[in-house]
Amino acid sequence: MKEKTPPKGAQAALRAIRLLKLFTIEKPDLSLTQVSIGADLNKTTTHRLLRALESENLVQRNSVNGRYSLGAGLMALGVQALSSSDLRRRARPILKLLARDTGETAQLEVPVQDGMLILDEVTGRHVVSATGNIGTHWPMHATSSGKAYIAYDANTFHQLPDSFSALTKNTITTKTKMKQQVESILKRGFSESVDELEPGYSCVGIAVFDALGNIQGALSIGGPSHRMTAERRLEIGVALKKASDRLSPEY
Image (tube, rainbow, N blue to C red; front, side, top):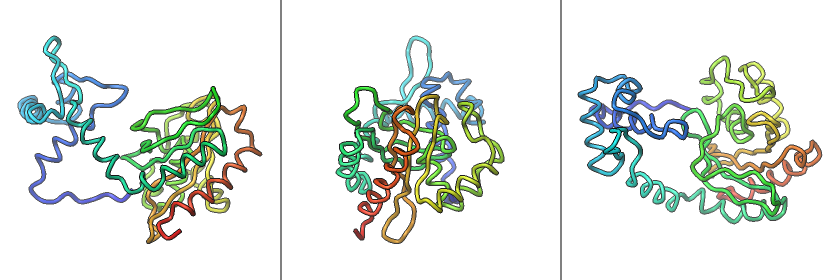
């Protein structure tokens, strides 16, 4: 993704935002020291920023152990962001149709930092299905949605590191192999991830664009690998192509 140059005088705001980004699913609460180290700031500055964020309910401090976590104010902002998303509004009925017709979980994902964020999802009819949570952040290199985004956004591809972490034995771990997949995606029009994010889970993805042809995110359909055979993935890829066309503002 293209890097943006921050405006002058925005240092304090950027520092606060970077503090918030330190809190993850894996690390939902952090001590003052951990935040200070993660943000590469001294403790005095870190404490001052945390106090400011706490005053706006964007972080909260545990009075027992003194550790910090994200506050309810951020949840409210997240709900507002979802409600105001034009892409999500347009994609919602399409996700419902995809989930109904395929029986699998359909998701809308957008790029956030070096991964893909689930903006919306509709679960399929199968008892055993793939379910994430809206707001879940997936590694870009191991998901069909991420690969689709990489294939159609040159800046994102160029900014990829030379190697990636292996989540399973099937995960792509080099930029060279990713380039090979990108070439395949551009020929077929859709992407695949087979047992790459986690064993037993496979998914198919396709990029979605705005009226000017700029990539906005990706649609994906995933499920247990025993159902997501090569033939089935091809069928889903065709269905996703039609869905992507329907999602275009010019459709």
